[in-house]
Amino acid sequence: MKKVGIVMGSDSDLPILRKTMDTLTSLGIPYECHIYSAHRTPEEARDFAVSARANGFGVLIAAAGMAAHLAGAMAAHLGGVLAAHTTLPVIGIPCKGPCLDGIDALLSTVMMPSGIPVATVAVNGGVNAALLSAQILAVEDAELAAKLDARRAADAAKVLEKDAALQAELNG
View 1 (tube, rainbow, N blue to C red):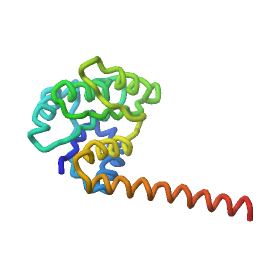
View 2 (cartoon, rainbow, N blue to C red; view 1 turned 90 degrees about the horizontal axis):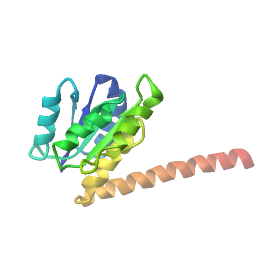
View 3 (cartoon, rainbow, N blue to C red; view 1 turned 90 degrees about the vertical axis):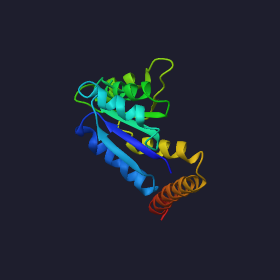
């Protein structure tokens, strides 16, 4: 199975990415996680992206707060840096920063220029980034697709259990 590469611009993004890593682990998807700054370690970020396919990655996730450039603002800058150096799918997670509640990172991530796409999940959307990665990898992996189907069914069952409890409380 292909790995997921996770890159954050700062260790302050780690709490969000722990959810990403936990979700990938629950689905049996291998991953690597690194801290690279689009601004302070641009060569390392570039090298990671350039060699990602050869190193067995199938999807890259870039997470960062504040208006920066790893995925292509930090999530956008970081994601953008990664996306500029690979044709693998790149998913940006805009993270809440000290100002603007992450809206700056969200807008920067979704506004990548034509030709350098970065898929974007919600602000602090680490779980959805992991699930989108899994869906991309599941295109060629029936076993992983079955795990995703089972997860969706389990999530639906939890909602229905909560509804049944609510109905019992309200009507009984």
